[in-house]
Length: 243
Image 1 (cartoon, helix red, strand yellow):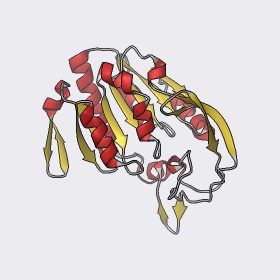
Image 2 (cartoon, helix red, strand yellow):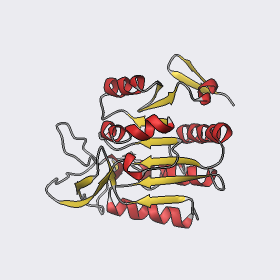
Image 3 (cartoon, one colour):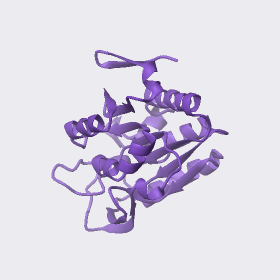
Image 4 (cartoon, one colour):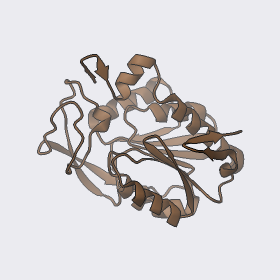
């Protein structure tokens, strides 16, 4: 979105700088490599709220030959861009679905913005609530499209190493729907916290044996038994990763 020489959103940042949150993407790649080092080939990463696929593509390219990505995007038109990016980058180790992720399997009525008008579509909240973010255009929550709502546990994954959750306020629901998978596999979690209750998230992590670090708009949580913890040190508000 561009407004009076200002802009924000994934697309704007890609057009302006040719990358998106490079420091976070670099950290995620390092964490995935550690899961390969300690747990072997077959690494599985899950991208909840994939948008056009910045994380999905970077992970898939990095993990060629030793890992795969499950990628989920609820907005149909944004999903088309995600699928196109997967195809043109030849990322055959990605499974992508046009679904929403939450606590249980059901359906969800998703609002449909005007994709021909500028907006930060990645900031669209699927469920209207008090204080819903203005994304650059008015959203009519009576104009919707019904899609499938799934839980991570319903996937019955054989392995889970890394999960990014960026679902515009539905983060707690996604975690609730992944409780069996998290208990079984103890994946690294990278969760956006700006539209969810930070204290609730940190309480969840603590109850499940995770150490949590705030990184900008996100919380990185790693299970206390994960040897990847040996490569992280916190200094004030910064997090250092060593190989």
